[in-house]
Image (cartoon, one colour):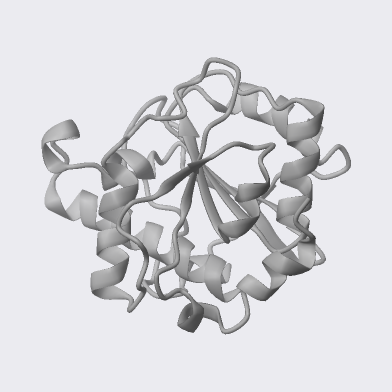
Length: 215
């Protein structure tokens, strides 16, 4: 297995090390549509490259939770609507990835939370998701969101929440709930969101990527 120190080296230099760097999409088991919002990540990558001086590969790659290749990607994105299951080996590999310097952003596309909470218990049995305050640096890393996570799509009338798992005060996992950032990243014709809504989603996504690479 790739040692955790390899991933730590990947992070040296912050954003200056992103040249030709790829980010990844997590293909998980359980029946949930891990492939949702297919235009979302490419659009976010293009926005970041154009606006915050990243040099990310325009095409994200797909990784498996148990595969050693996940250690090659400092930023992994996960989304969907339904069930999520991590096997024992997948949970162990994800835990090693995150504790070794990796970052996982999970965006609930609606309907994922109840399954995800159970799956994350396999990854971190002794850690709980904690809500990030609006003062957290992730909301101010490039663009300012003084009220915290923005609301992009309305589902149940609940407020948007950014929930995190920390290791030694480092945010290793971010779960965005009741916001649906990924829908806002998609092509305009998919959800017909106004330009200002899509821009808000892209700016928040850029903040997440910038924060992940710099921390």
